[in-house]
Length: 494
Image 1: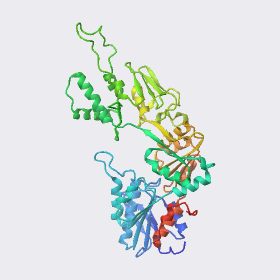
Image 2: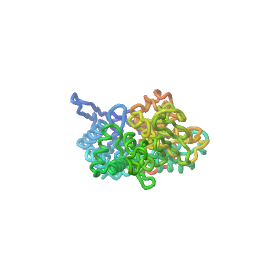
Image 3: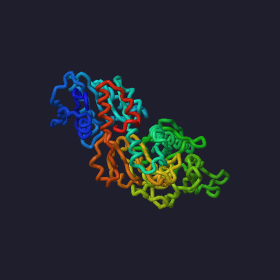
Image 4: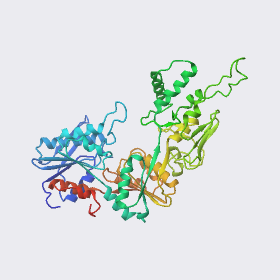
């Protein structure tokens, strides 16, 4: 590539393959840079040639199968600092997958905004400019006091769809959650097709639910009740494994918070079936305890005084049932982590008997199983019947969201399902999950090294090269040209 001889491109250990592809596109050699660890695990950086008064670009991705994310980040900061002390004229940090990008806001008390801390670290280390791609949250650009170019893989994805998907004009772009709706609509507009989204109907206000339940217990027992008592009760339940900690919004039903309590609490709160007028003391009213179980659950979960329950969907169809002495059963189109058996992911197949699972894999039964399924119901907004559905998201970690979304689309009648993910972290057992996904192809970009996982998934995983876009952004930044063209679908070479 002409006019780029004064560019110095360095890289650490996180993604040398991508750095080599970018260097080839630019027509330059990688500047020698050795990054290793001493015996005490401290990082040592040696730059093999002079960078004095040069335009330096340091390419280091935030996630990698080669190094831990924290090591990748520290390698980047040390290389930036080394270039700064070596009198580089300008230093640009090229970070295809930005680390800690999901930690972009304070979503609960005392939570750190780690993405802001990472931005400060990169700036203090010596970066004058940052180039990244498909940030999880665009506001991260505002965490920096230096220029940030947030590249997009959207034009490349659009070209892939036009090239690889049959009858793509009749396809529908789907967001696997409400948070990605903007991304899905942008791609749908670019292609001129319809879009849909899947709403994950989760209820997370557990502290409030426990507080109300304990208040009811205290009222019935004639004992004083304080908020401190409720919070300690919630903490005790969390430590004992009877409930999982959660944070987020609160959902109400008929004036009450939707309840998600362990079986033990529901048992204590239930109407005593043995309490009747025949057993009550002579001359007194029958002893009956108020039945909050039915009135407090709501959200499609109904139960009788014996503890039997069933869940209905938004159309009133029964999709899950169970109770005391009855094994929970799934029917209809209920979907959730416990309903992926049809795809081979785990759990009972739709319409078969089986128990639900908590997020940590613990088997649930009774009302806890009912509420687990109710919490994880997936609601599809849009018509995918007989059409090719293409899921788009910025990041895939464990793959569970994709599995749920793919099954939801299949159950809704989608003829084929594809998925396009910008950053395929694919940690844990994600590779095993991909092999069992109910979709034709999962496409990820090479912002994160995943080449070795293609064979492990039996070819179901495809890696799309975005090095041309990164290389062109480097060339344009070096020459002071606008990068706006990289956000359009006009240039077929990028």
